[in-house]
Length: 429
Image 1 (cartoon, helix red, strand yellow):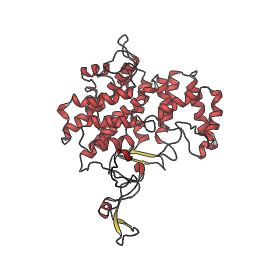
Image 2 (spheres, helix red, strand yellow):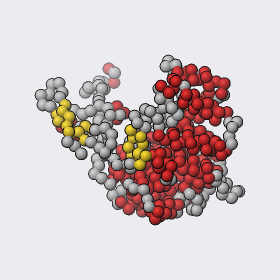
Image 3 (spheres, helix red, strand yellow):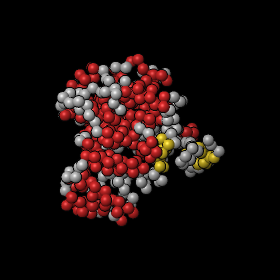
Image 4 (cartoon, one colour):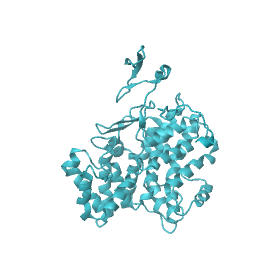
């Protein structure tokens, strides 16, 4: 894994420091700086943008080339040839399931979708207008109080049981957040329904009607979950790993991930797309806002275009665009003003020289926001659905860390505060 080294020389220190250079399967080499503290120095990297915090075999991203691989499989192929639950199995176990494994895994998940009845009473304690993400944080963290039988993080069987429970119950909890938010009765899951189909049934079904879910919408929702299943060492995944490094139970670690995802710079991007469309308000205002977006001195930005990681294109967006077109065609939506604005902006971004030259292409958040809007999901639920899909990535990274030797996370700092001083009498302050 290492046959190279980097040599560091520091002014004022006579001895040069040799640092191992490690090579992974794909991607950049990394310099192991672990020995720096013995030389009384350490690195400074705000945001950890140049620091590999761990070794992982789960997901690889090459932002310059628009590549996203889960266990070596391109995201485009997984989206075309597999399902969300197959991808879950892959992320957890390292390989795609065969027929028998697939059937067994789907059976395990479908039979664990129910939640303890006491959780319904837990929801009743939230205000009627509580934000769904606030409820999700609280309820997932509280799940550790219900499952004492599988909280030994050093037991591989316990870890897998917990993984199955989280994947199975997150759609149920997400739907309960929505039902509480809109004041409707909770809908129990149906074991005979597929994963995404069951979620839409619990979201939009009522006790007054027979279960009925449009298969086109169910397939689009399955893709939404699949395309958000994992994205390497992002803020929320790193948060889950950091919380897990203390030995915390997995439910509290996932709750920490949900809290990190809630931030508008992370999981709130697709919600920001809809807020931007609302701000534009009408097709006749598009040219004005596009002009504002091109003005480097104007703080306005078109949300859902370009990506912090992908510098050429977002491979997930290509898949999501197709699903978006299918959903809009299936629903026959033509008159919705926000969707008209979105389609016009998409056309501009793909054809206008300014956007093309700067690679400000529509990303996965742009299309997922449009799909959820078309399905009838309120913007307050967007990040909850993101969290539901991302749960498997979080738990896979947590399990990978716990399964191998690891250290508690303890970042260092560059201290720039006052040096040591004495406390003066209060009259002299």
